[in-house]
Amino acid sequence: MAPLSDAKAFVRALAPVRRKRWVVYAKPPFAGPKAVLAYLSRYTHRVAISSRRILAFDGQNVSLRVKDYRRPEAGQARVMTLSATEFIRRFLLHVLPRGFHRIRHYGFLAGSNRKDALAHIRTILGTPAPPRSTDPEPDTRDAATDARPPCPRCGGPMRTVGSFAGWYQPRGPPFSPAPNRACTP
Image (cartoon, rainbow, N blue to C red; front, side, top):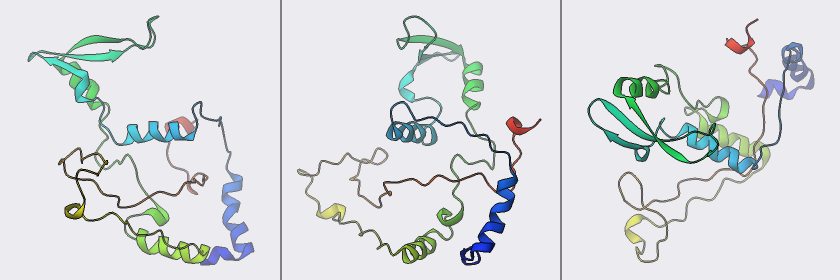
C-alpha cells in the first residue's frame, strides 16, 4: 500500500484497469441491502436442501417438499418424488469441486494476516479498535435471564465474539482477467 500513496504511482496502477471493457448492470435490490445479505448468507452457509424438506425415503425413492413458482398456485408446497440416484445427482450439482471455496477472503481479510492488517488499517484511519466482548463467561451467566438462543450444534450458550461494520465498500474486478465462460467470445 505504501507505494500507492504517491499520486503518480497510483495513476500508473490504475492504467491497466482503465483499459478494460467494463460491463456494469446494477439496480437497487427490491427489498433493500439487508434482504440481499440475508439471501447471500443463506446461500453460502447452508447445504442444498434442508433436512426438513425431505419427507420420506423408502430405499428406492426420496419424497421431498418443493415449491414450483411456475404454476398458478405459486408458492404452495407440493411433494416431489425422485429416484434415489436422481436425488443424489441433483444434490451433487451443489457440491463444489475439490479446491473450490464458497467464500474466499483476499487482501487484508485473508486469514494469515487479518489481525495485523486490520490493526494497521485502524491506525491509518485513526479508528479505535472495537471494544472487546463484554459477555460474561458461560458459567457466570444467569440462565433464567439469558434470552439468547442456544448453540444449534451443541445446545450450549452462545456468546458474542465479534461484530461487523455497518457499511460496505464496493470494489472493481481483479487486475488480471480470470477465465470465465461468460466473457469468452
